[in-house]
Length: 238
Picture (cartoon, rainbow, N blue to C red):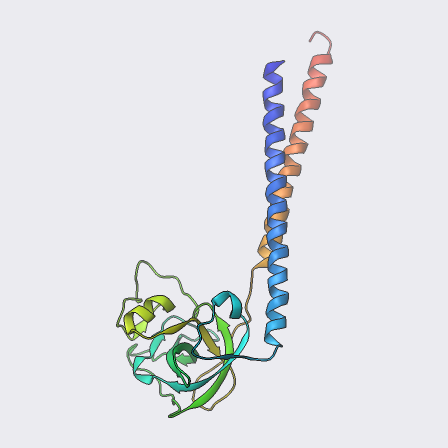
């Protein structure tokens, strides 16, 4: 009896765990759907002003924002390996000195890469003096895969990634905790055809179905095994 009970308990455990994991993925999908709805709401809401007062990332991420000030062109960073329409290029990230104090990093847009010389940067223009910009507040200027520090070492003009806190410590600039992903056309030679924010909700629904499929398979196997065992017990001569 004991030998038959252990497999049944194991199958019940597998079913319980996989069903629970399926519900967890479903809940994650619902959370991401709520985030997508908020992103759409934020993008259509009036732009929030960015000034000297520090703003928490959680309060502004994905919101439309606007800021007045001037670009600090001598501290520009080019983020490498940012393709656009299958063409390699850079994101141009530059500090923006706010008119009433403080700084914020701005991802100004995409620039094609010189295929013969990585260090040669294609021409683009930076407005002189005070300007007003608009964009979307993001946690960073996008992240690309890298091994170790890769091209993100401090004081390099061309890097793989850029962390806001690390760059603030490197430059001594009192930066806001987010990056403005600039929008609009300014005739500066940069492309601002930004990809829409994605949360990957489809993956969560896919994982949910996989877990529940495994639960159904385990239950089906258990019922099949129990039926075969019952037939053997009731077979003549058993």
